[in-house]
Image 1 (cartoon, one colour):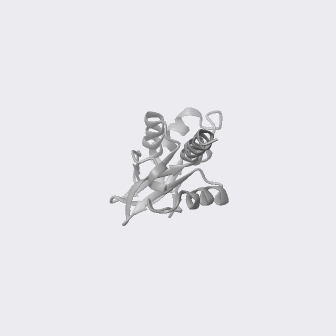
Image 2 (tube, rainbow, N blue to C red; image 1 turned 90 degrees about the vertical axis):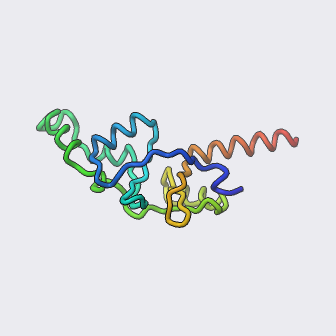
Image 3 (cartoon, rainbow, N blue to C red; image 1 turned 30 degrees about the horizontal axis):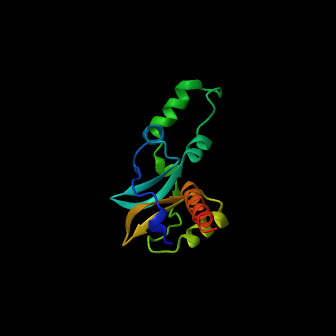
Length: 141
């Protein structure tokens, strides 16, 4: 089984120049927890909801909501993203992707082919694979 068989192809992306407000709105609109970050159409990073949350001050901190909103609107996503993320190819065995996710304690790998983003494979996709394999095994018992 290959990465292409279980990856998510329809993926939302964000531009590295977009600010954290645009990023947060994209997370809310799409319900994704990971967003590939592009520059001129090329993958340059990945950002998670957790990356954004950890960067932002508490609403109760000094400065309050005004400071919070200012940071959301003035901080480019490139400041909080992970640069040069690990990637996989669509033709790689899905077990290699699972091993990378597990070993590096990450939830998402961009899937790249010939320099172009083709999708992502996530821990949720791996759970879908587990369900598929379990059902296949039960069907053959």
